[in-house]
Length: 133
Image 1: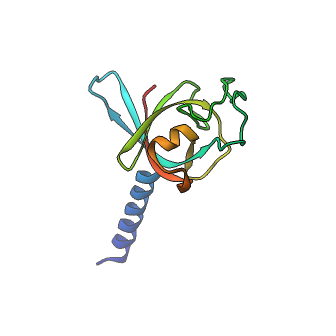
Image 2: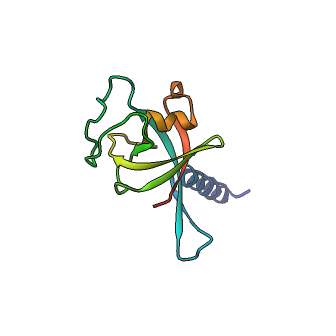
Image 3: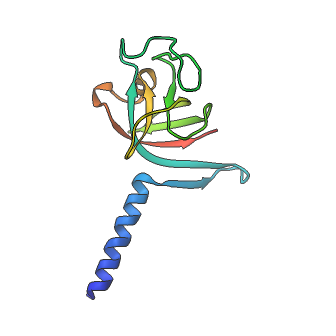
């Protein structure tokens, strides 16, 4: 097989894999005027006992509650509802905070939200998320 074809095929497969792991996919919903955004990334959690005082203001100004179904994201507007899925379990959270994370990590779930889909001992999990608005 031609080395150029093998190289181009390898590059194409690698790029498609990266897009599948880290990119966004726009999927039309049942109503053609609405569009859902699906993406994958790593999610972490915050709000261990004593880490952040209950009622402390989040970046949105909303009081922090470790058991609330909330999350931090670096760019989604505050109030955005997001369905987060991991190994067949899902939780719907509302974005009310910002994070200082990078790389493939894009969501920081409250302790309460994380426990709905995974054991906190895992720390970081690969999730798929859907923006519900």
